[in-house]
Image (cartoon, rainbow, N blue to C red; front, side):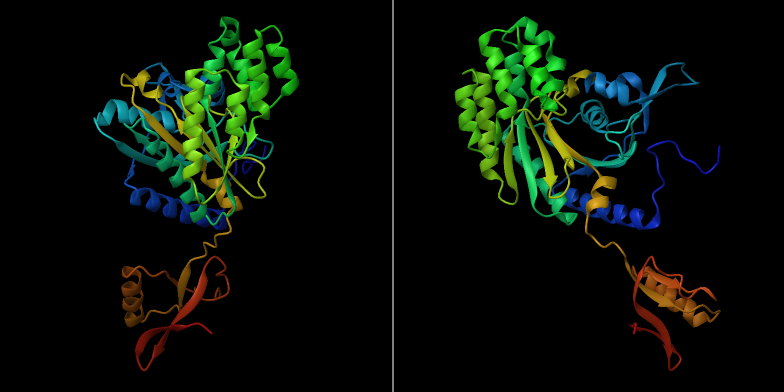
Length: 383
């Protein structure tokens, strides 16, 4: 086997892609900081028990596992950073009030999400802890929309769902709860024939309600239709009220309701949402409320957040990340060295063209040039 080959769905990030990823990473982290989110850097490797506090069997299948040579215990390479940030909030920071945390790092998956998807994603996201009200949900949704707009993505659509609807329906009959994961998979994929098969022997109320969920998709007016087709249960009524409130607050994106969009249902406990952009069939960002995750670390806290894959967003982003740079000649002149050093200290990118390679400079936008005028080095626009 050739030594330069990489595993399937694993790829190097080349300069043009890396440049855009880094530009977007900086933009998003700066925006997170403007909202008051503090950066944390969880480790790539943890004991497997810590990584599996949420996400169900799907997350377990996505985690690479190995044996720790020091302790003999099983370790995992993280497939999602959200549980790690929950651990930091619950066990290490241990703050009583609202805590806002953000992160950016690599996650690894044993299997790709799609045919051409990478198994090595660069996950960036933000989480807010300590506030159970819809104000936190609204803030994190707005931050996600800001992030997509900063990436140059226009015509963004926000899809809203609520984990409480399915949870309430599963509690109507014990047999329904026993089939919860199968029902969740059928709903998430909108597999109507499979859904009919799974609900065939249920009582009339849960059967009709579960079969109605895939069709409850549309603008905010679909919530009124849902009130007529779903059981009049307090949990469901409150979930629909929450979605109606949030849908009315968003002004810079199209808002759709999708009561069968249950990706992440395994650990979400309330409002869930996804971000879509024109020309891309799958969601480019996901988020939602997950109040129960911290309990595994000894401290349950209200929590909501979102994340996206920077590599995927960079692939579709129109942002031109070619940095402005100054082209300088190559020689041993001391005054030239000093001039270049001063420009770099001021934050400028200055690149000296090595002899014979004056045209190998495609990675930067050289809009200025450093030239000598009357014994002094000056920066001038490049012709």
